[in-house]
Structure formats: C-alpha cells, structure tokens
Amino acid sequence: MNKSELIETVSAEADISKAATERAINSMIDAITKAVTKGDRVTLVGFGTFYSSKRAARVGKNPRTGEKIKIAAATVPKFSAGAAFKATVNKKKTK
Image 1 (cartoon, rainbow, N blue to C red):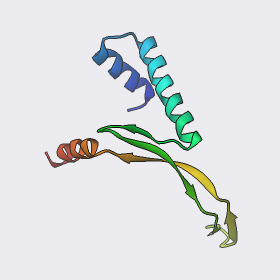
Image 2: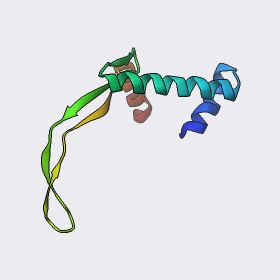
Image 3: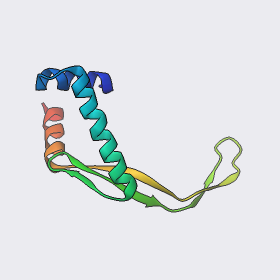
Image 4: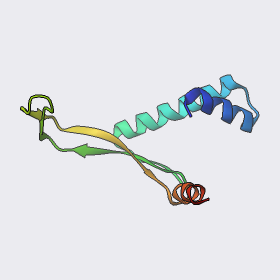
C-alpha cells in the first residue's frame, strides 16, 4: 500500500474527503518527523513507537574495490511495533 492508497482507504473508512484525509495524514507525518528529529519519542499505544537512535562511526568496505572507507556517525529514525500490532500481524500470517 502506498500513500495514495492509504489516503483512499482512510477516507472511505472515516467517511471524510480525500483532501481532508491527505491533510490529516501529512500533518501526522510532519508532527512525528519533527518530534523524532528533536529526540522525542512518539508512542501510539497499541501500534508502536517512533524514536531516534545514534549509530557510531565505523569502518566499512567498498564491495567493488575492497577498499576500507570511513562511515560517519549518524542519528537514524527507528520504529518499534507495539504488542497489539504484532499480535494482529501474527494472527493474519497463521490463518
């Protein structure tokens, strides 16, 4: 499912216009992005938690040449699925 399909689905299930649904989804994504960028956690109970994590600098290897390269430290976004979300996904896979 891509973003436009998500907008169509939410619009139909919530019985609101696609334009309003798109604004709501974009606002939610922006709010989560801003919070995680600041270092905050965004927890949606039952669904999961969005957060940032620090990744240390390390030495990697260019797969073509075998040459060692330095990979800089970075802050990366992460998502941890909630228990209810995991349970729902697992039930669907076992049927």
